[in-house]
Structures are given as structure tokens and as C-alpha cells.
Image 1 (cartoon, each protein chain N blue to C red):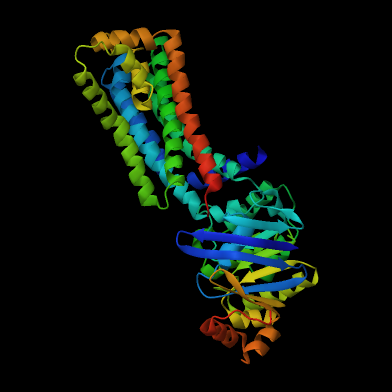
Image 2 (cartoon, each protein chain N blue to C red):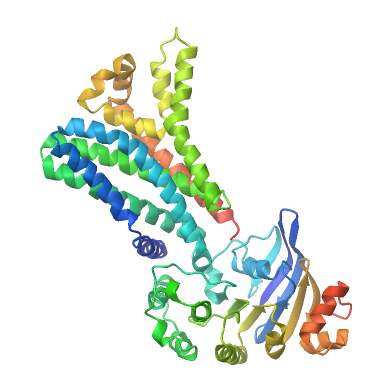
Amino acid sequence: MHSMLTVLRFNLHELARNRWLGAYALFFGAIGWALFYFGAAPDQAAASVLDLVVFLVPLVSLTVGVLCFYSARDYADLLLTQPISRRTVFAGQYLAAALSLAVPFAVGLGVPFLWYGSHERAMETLLLLLLAGLMLTLICVALAFLISVGTENRLGALGGALVVWLFFVVIYDGLLLVLIMAFPNYQLGRPLAGLVLLNPFDLARIVILLRLDIAALMGYTGAIFQQFFGATRGLVIALTALSLWTVLPILLGAIAYARRDF
Amino acid sequence: MVEIRDVRKRFGALIALDGLSLAIKPGEITSIVGPNAAGKSTLLKCMLGLIHPDAGEILIDGSVVNGGWRYRKKIGYVPQTPRFPEAFCAKELLAFLTDLRGLEPRNESRLIELFGLESTMNRPLHYLSGGTRQKISLVIAAMFDPEILLMDEPTVGLDPLSSRRQKQWLREERARGKTIIVASHLMAELEELADRVIFLLDGRVYFDGPPARALATTGERTLEATIAKMMEDRQPCTAC
């Protein structure tokens, strides 16, 4: 544990020199501040920020995750020739990358919400957005590390990360639409709720949308989703699926990292 | 004692190590020579666990180390091209390694003084020249007084004075019973230092013995000429 924390501190020290961490916090701070300044209620502000969280946080986390991995790869010899396991090195590097993104996101988004909406409803909304953003950060950095371990160069890994982002943001939803069109006479609400578990971006978005007042606009499918994800059991399943989306890429990445030649 | 038993490593179609077997004794400077892509760096990296052999065993002091990591506390490594994190200065980096190992460094001050690094310890590593980074790498490799030193082209980028001091220091370490393995293509450097020369070609041992015997085998006057002749002939030494 001491070795892992030392490697984590080492990587955080290296990442802290990057100014984009501050820019990332400022971006979310500016968006949150602008929404409240122009009069949005917490739910409206949350709905507006939600799309940014669901699209932008994964994109930034995937690309920065790849860049962090390859930045650490440049001096991998230094750590991997020390008497510590590869699992320790991998865990320290992953946590450093995830923290370097999660902290600016939480600070950037949290400050305007705390400033403008200190009542209970705003706090609940903020916590939901933070939870979604942080889960997506952990998942996407884990996916970025898994992609990076399996590729030989930075550009290839960045390409892979962008393909993953496009798949979950555009292609997966397109495939679901094709499915719905192909079976017009079937009620696909429940199978769709199951299929959403396979897309962490959609999952995070739906879990939050259902907690906001605007969920009523989602129609029949929304009602099915409300029935599934709105209940405690569904929420537990959703959070379990998001946790699995984090843990599995980390485990697979750590195994591949241990087998890789440097 | 480092033992390598029938180690094989292939990168696609390229055979880097082809059933290599060696035993390297402590108290000697063993130099591994050979042309580019002969397998020198691959062999050192296999000993360090950076590269996993496809087959064979590596033993340190009688214990098989394949896949392990604790044995690396016995090893100091000087890479061919030292790369460091950019946000650190040398002093911070050495402090980090000390914290990581949980040991008090034994040779740090002496080596910093030996290579004249006192004034550069607080400067960011990315501002340092290649030679200075090489010296920092030597300090890192030796600061915990390891039993085994693996050095990949350790004199590249060093000025003549630092190179001379490094050689003198290696002789002292040899006298203290250290196992020193140096991979290099600078034959003149090795001729001065090495007790034993291992010539690798196509991942196999083509010559293994003292430098004097290598010279006698080919009739050449220098180690460089000897190795060049062996490369031209590409015949394994039958007298080894």
C-alpha cells in the first residue's frame, strides 16, 4: 500500500504541472455560474449541464487518460526497475490520472452550485451530477488505460479512445434505434432498459434524468425506465453496472500491463 | 550470481534471444557486446523483468526470478537513454526513490560529489543535458548499493573526466565483489574494464571469455577489430 501511495503521489506531482487541469475546472465553473446567473433553477441548470457531463467528461477522460498513460510510459523504466510490482505501478498511475480529472471536475461544478443553490433540492441535483461525472471519469480513464496497454503508440491509442467515445455516444444509440425500427410491434421498454446497462454514458444520463422533473417528458419508454431505474432496485442495478464498467477495464488493463514488454 | 538458462525471446519474426545460457559471477565486470539488434538490451531487460522471455529461466543467487519483483532490490540499472518525469528536479526524484524503497541511500552523496552534480540537484530534470541525465541515472542505479549493476551503454554522453571517474568507480565496485554487467558497443571502453567479454550475434553467444583470449583467437590488436572480424566471419568461436 505504501508503494502504491508513493507511486500515486509521484504521478500526481508530475500531472500537477499541467495547466489543463485548471482550465478543466474553470470550464465547468464558468458553465455552472453562467446557468445560474441567467436565472436557471437547479433542475434546469442540471439538465443543461447533464449533456455536457455525459459527452464532454468521457471525451476528456478518454483522451487525457491515454495521454497520461503514454506520458508515464516515457519514464516507465524508472518505476518498473524498482522493487515494486507492475500492479502497484499501474494502480498508482490510474488513480493519479483519474484524480487529476475528478478533482477539477468536482471543484469546477461544485462551486457555482454551492454558491447559488444552497437549498436541499439544488444539493441533491449537484450530488447526482457529481456522482455521474465522477463515475464516468473513473470508467473512461479505466477504458483509456485498457486501450493504451493494448496499443503500441500514442496515436493508435488516441484513435481507439475516440472510436470508443463515438460508439457509446452515437453508434450504440443508432443501433438501439435500428432495433426499435426492426420490431415496431413489440414493446421493447424492458429489453431496452437492459441494453442501456451496456452503455455507461446512457446509463449515467438516464439515472439522472429520471431524478429530475423533466423525466415526465420521456413518454412511454420514460415510464418504463422510471419504473425500472426509478425504483431502489433499479438504481442499485445501475450503480452496480457503472461500478462493473469501472472495475472490469482496470482489472483487464492491469493483467495486460503485467504481461506487456517494456 | 546471475544465471541465464536457455532463454528465448522473439519479437514477431525477429529472434532476439535464441536459447541463451550464461552464468555471470560476482566480482567481475562482464561486458556484453554485439552489433545493433544482437539482443544485448533485450538480455538486460529480461534480467530486470521489463521483457518477459518466451522460454527459459533467469536465476539471481539461485532463485528463479521470472515474473517476480522483489529481487530487483538487489539490482541497479542504467538504461541506454535515461528518461525522467519532467516536473521533478534530481533531488526530488532521489527523495521519491528513497521513499519508495524505504531504505536510506548509502552511496548518494559520494556519487553526487564524484560526478560533480551538486549544483544541478535542484534544477528541473528536463533542463539537464544528456550527459548530466546519464550521471543522474548512474546515481539512481547505485545509490542503494545494489549487489548487481546492469548498465546499458553507460558512458554515452559522458565527458572524458566523468567517463574516467565512472570507470574508476566501477573498478572499486568490482573489488567490493559486485556483479557488474555492461552492454556497450564502445569496445575501447570495455577493453580497459572488462574481465570477460560475451559477444552476442543473432541472439546467441558467439564468444565468451577474457578480452585477451578474444584478441588471441582472431590475431587482431584491439577488441574493436576482433569483434569486427568475428562479425565478418559470423562463425561461433570453437575455442570458447
